[in-house]
Length: 208
Image 1 (cartoon, rainbow, N blue to C red):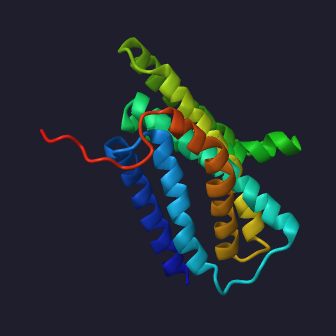
Image 2: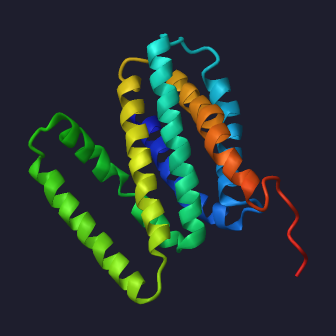
């Protein structure tokens, strides 16, 4: 069981690394890419959750809220990837584990663990160095800011989902989170933005 969970974890990390490259090469705009990614992901999620137990209405509402946060994360991250480098956008959004550790501390006003403080200082020092170097080289600060905001959205999504998975079936939580992202977050956020941009449907790239 543990080995299976670790395998899924490694596969998820690997696929996350490929995602930004696919966004860059996508034939649709960043917001449209997020929209289709969220909508299509509902299909395998529904298959996995088909025989899973249901959830009470309150928990479904929380899962939908997590989905809205996930949609915001993807829209902002995709936009960041197009404005700055794939490396920067991915590195900055991957500070979300630090935010996952810090947000409960700020919310509950508890003294943070020394390891969290030390790790946070190192992480933010690295971000400051990266931002300063890219700023001197003409880097896109708005794109970097979008990536950091995307990390915050994903951290909130992660905290809500983790709390739900402690008392509900993970497949069911995932399904309702993706429904929230696709129908609430994407339909009210990604889709209108995509309609205002150049493309929402995949198009063939011109030859040459």
